[in-house]
Length: 431
View 1 (cartoon, one colour):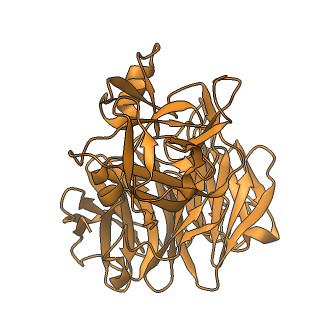
View 2 (view 1 turned 180 degrees about the vertical axis):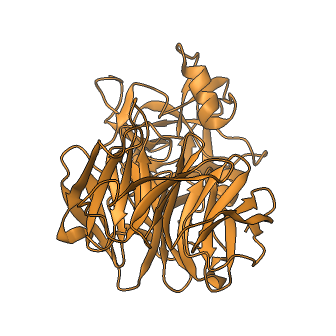
């Protein structure tokens, strides 16, 4: 846990938002301002005059809040000044009962604010520029979004957190699908990387795929102290997850980390002294052909299950396929994770800069540059989405941080180092 705010909040019943170096927390009838660097409350009544705050979000240095007490939406500037922009008085006949979670679809000249109308079981869409004239009070309404509370948007889909379920809305077609259910009460939803994080009654945080598949029902390896909290809401900003705790009147901030996923999909053929063999059949001591050092014995091989989102964005933590159309010398198509590197003599235009974004700097193995699959445009995102088993291996080396060039399906790629597979990969060792 990075910090635990002082327990001076008046029942922080949910969402928080970050602007600049400050965290803004809705606390019933007020918004409390907190120093982001150390969790110290700097103004417990930064913005006032609300009846019962239901949700909070921010866009372009403006905070948007919903008030369930009078079914209204207001903006708050950075000085704490409150302006009502949308309610049943401004828009007669509005179907906005008990508004809760808010999310803004950014981009364009007229970004839209979406409101979870919990009492009406519908999602409302309003313009942030002309809210009282450009709105759709039943943008989405379905039995699948009964009592919507939390909202987030990822890659053209809206994810709606209800008390015991998560639904997914295609924002182009407004097709609504329930993707996850839970007998426990859910509190808040936030995206990070290729996953969704959901607060669960009892002080837990679930990690889900974008398809609703449960990846981890209690993310202790990411949030080791979170079990002491009654999670009332989760919000993610940058690499930090913020969890509000109504029982203790506090907010916790936790650093999210993603394990490196540098692996081959099962079935990959590795060149050995016995020819090409499936990686899952290799064991410690088997001899693997290297680029410059002949055959080297296997030091360790591991496997792990990963979720592959198959998104069009070329993120590093998903699978990519190199086909025989792009690499005619391949034995068969090669499927690797985005961080896995092909070894090349030189970078093409733009590849060096993109490689630095993925790896942090330029690395070399066996006198060749490492080019991540997610950067190499010859590799395409693998289909379909789902859970897959991946493998990686390390060979014997006097220097535990060094690796080798080897051949996978006929393509020259990198191995893991001893250090990487032992300390970072978090894989199940195969003996």
